[in-house]
Length: 302
Image 1 (cartoon, rainbow, N blue to C red):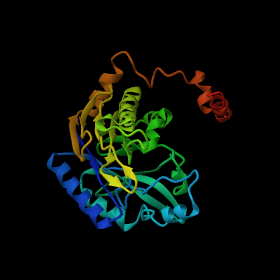
Image 2: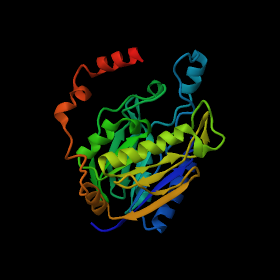
Image 3: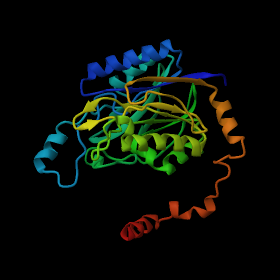
């Protein structure tokens, strides 16, 4: 395969669907102007994210208010997804939305182009009370696209090495990580560039790319929504863990051009082939039925 141009966005998306479509259309146009074959947009593009993350000692009144302000729930085969697919045309576009499956809601991502849906994903790992609004997904899988074999995950998923590894073992060359990743809620740094949650966001992105030797593309929301301020920091990371392009702490579009297969082959041919050299027979604690009880014991000693 030849060189391919990839773009990733940090943009603000709220409840106004018309505004969301306009932002998506504008971003697709700019990515197309740059010659991009793939554009990765943030989590919760269509209808925005949650205005706050509940749980704990949340009052009943606050709970009712939160549940009355959820994003619109959209069906995977509905007109809203089809509208973005039509905008994409010959470009591959990945974006987030709230998926409806009957009365059940999922924090979801989808990859489309002009022919329709190429792949979809429902977020597995749920932070800070997100489970009060969404059900959890149950699988990771890769899928084929015109830009190569891809996989998707959402936000908090990136904190779990097993999630990215599962996608890489399914043959993904590109993993897209869509986020609405906020700043720290405590101990705020004067400059967002020094925020400790931004630091975590960046470390996870580089580590997941490096340990799986894949191209990692991380989008993020920008600006503020409800009580959340987002760190931006959209980026494209090469299979050696190097940041090829990024937006920093500003909204915008980051773009890089590379030969994906050649870059992966170079990373895996330099004496460290992380997928091949695994030793699954000694990783039993990760997958056996007693793993959660072991975690409980570790936590009780902390």
